[in-house]
Length: 102
Image 1 (cartoon, rainbow, N blue to C red):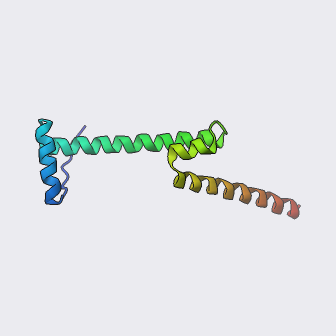
Image 2 (cartoon, rainbow, N blue to C red; image 1 turned 180 degrees about the vertical axis):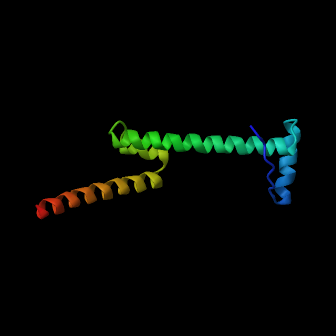
Image 3 (cartoon, helix red, strand yellow; image 1 turned 45 degrees about the vertical axis):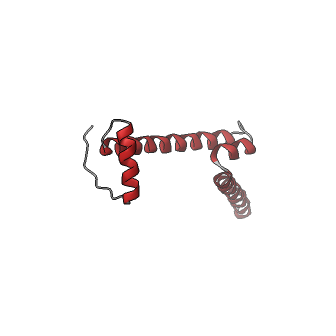
């Protein structure tokens, strides 16, 4: 895979920490930053996939609402729950209106 240069600015206190960590791992600062960034991106993608799977399982009643909240976090779970409720109510209302037009 082609590597493209990227410029990143850090506060000096972070640079000294990065340098110390890189030295302890026998890496250059760039190698450490690349590794940390790659790990962070992979973790974020895995968490996104876990959330998608959890939403699907909750929507299909394969896990409880409590389990769902534990997996993706209370705040985000409540947003999904509200979204689902809003969609359900909108569909029900649309069906009612459709029957009235017949």
